[in-house]
Amino acid sequence: MGLPIVTAAVGGPSKILEHGRTGILCPPKNAEALGDAILKLLMNAHLRRRIGVAAVAEVRRRGSICAVAACEGEMAVSARRREDAGGVPRGRI
Picture 1 (cartoon, rainbow, N blue to C red):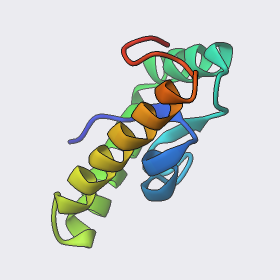
Picture 2: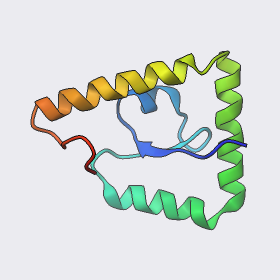
Picture 3: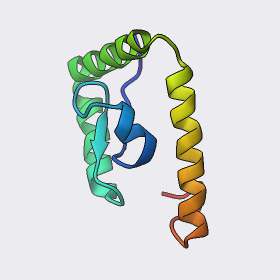
Picture 4: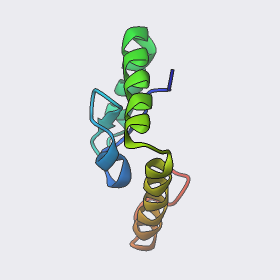
């Protein structure tokens, strides 16, 4: 079983995750929505399992973890561009 992902709906994650099926996507710069999504998963074991299993199945369906690695690279580049543009510094929420 995989782990459910909760993230902001920006960049790479928003391209590979399907909200409510393979992850939970929250509005950007919305800490309250992020916290609510995490609490929802903590309180609902069935939802955690369902999203985790669906995420693993999707990675397998795509044929490789390479798609995930490419997404992580894109996220790093995107985060760096935001930082360079005066956005949120890396390592900070």
